[in-house]
Length: 448
Image (cartoon, rainbow, N blue to C red; front, side, top):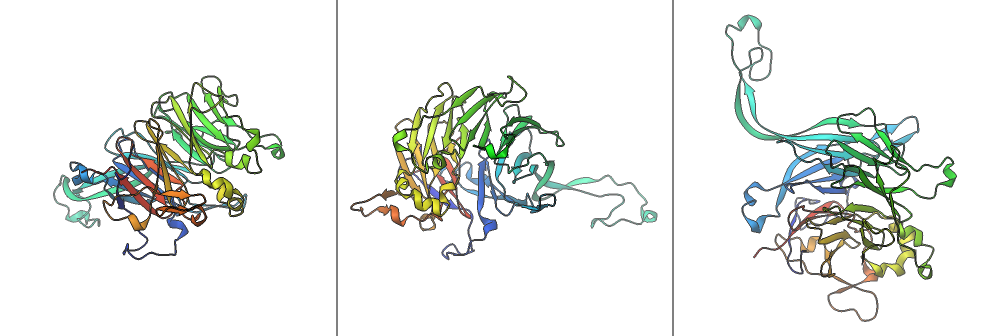
């Protein structure tokens, strides 16, 4: 796990050309809505509310210099989704990128899936550093030559050119979801993937765009009887027949696609019994699971609700094996958080490469990291004030009452407009990416 004081930072995305000039006006389209490393960690993709995907690449010259291993620069930028309008339902469909998932690399090109509320797209990211010259029917500017002036046959040759990164759409998977897509997950067979909305989960083949198989449907016959919705879904990292999905009631269902074509009957049901003494008006809201992630080993899964992160053993359904409080000091603030709608914020969580540590976000641009071996935790802040290259981050503490120490921040002075919803951990190294509104921060272990 990353330890106290062992951090360096690069700020990759700025509001202005001058990092010292803080811009108070944040365009909604620039707010980062998803962050995802690819399987090697060489590439890092972000999606925003404007439908754009920005891909950062590990700096080539830094790969052999450990002290700069966390430096990523812009590799490619492209518009993934455009705003649409559903004329039948008179609904606007946002271009916001809800999720990005990388496919395992099979050749020199990279492939990723990106989705907004309704449409999933498969993109190919490839490099081109040569171009063909010496065509017979066209001149060097691409204009057609006069056929009567062509007196000899020329063989085109490949000539070097400046490196060009091209993003081209290869598949468009549309018209399969009535409700908003909240999750996509690539299966371990590398041929299929899941997409989930509030009431249904579909199984797609990467080569087939005109049909998908509905494998979960929790829509009641009478919508007035609706009591819960699907909040997240993910495929098992090793077993292509197993997947889980979480609900707004704080439950997780594990399904086996070998059991039936329609997985409405779960194989395992994970739920922690509620303590009746702590029940309140907000209990059901804060128990809603906003994210579920399998560990890399496939033995455990992690869920994030509003106040905590829980680690579950797949062999034990009645309670989690580990529970970490993210911001328990907000329990006394639930009424005001309900009034300003912050209680409905959907925080994500992620594992480190060895499954020994977990990370998730909080308010005031704080993010929390928990070491599963030592049970130690740390709170850090992603802010412009500490965004100098290779600066050391200091742990932050929140004071809940009484005398406040010099380095503590009062719970009453937390900024709930600054929130870390999206985080990602490098699959092999202690490098993390944190999205804070419209800024992306990269942190790494400090190398002496």
